[in-house]
Length: 157
Image 1 (cartoon, rainbow, N blue to C red):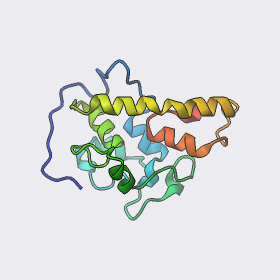
Image 2: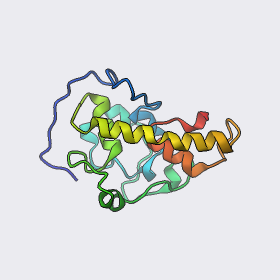
Image 3: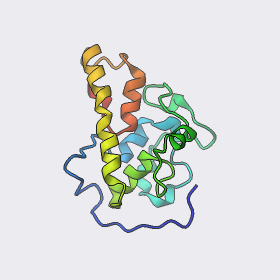
């Protein structure tokens, strides 16, 4: 999907995050739990640590919601994200690609916007807390899966 793009790592892997950005899951944990129907990272594995993919739930053929932790589709197609102009040109796959690169140490001009988008997902946390008993992972599974896509551990809510 992306050719000829390179970047510099200016922070240690998994460290020196912006103080407002406190993801609960690493990219490796997210891939192991099952996110984005397994289709998200199938053609760019060389860019990231091999360990991220040893237990990752991936589908080389097509988006498969059964691979998601909550076995439900909580994704919009990439075309939708492009239409909304939520895609930063350097990260054509969107937020998760940005997060993976941020996690390994890349910092870029889109960091503030992406962190703001991550924080906006807290509205879903509020809805789960308001409408579900703590630990009832069968309550609001689509919102819970969406939160996993944004590095919030919705299994603990």
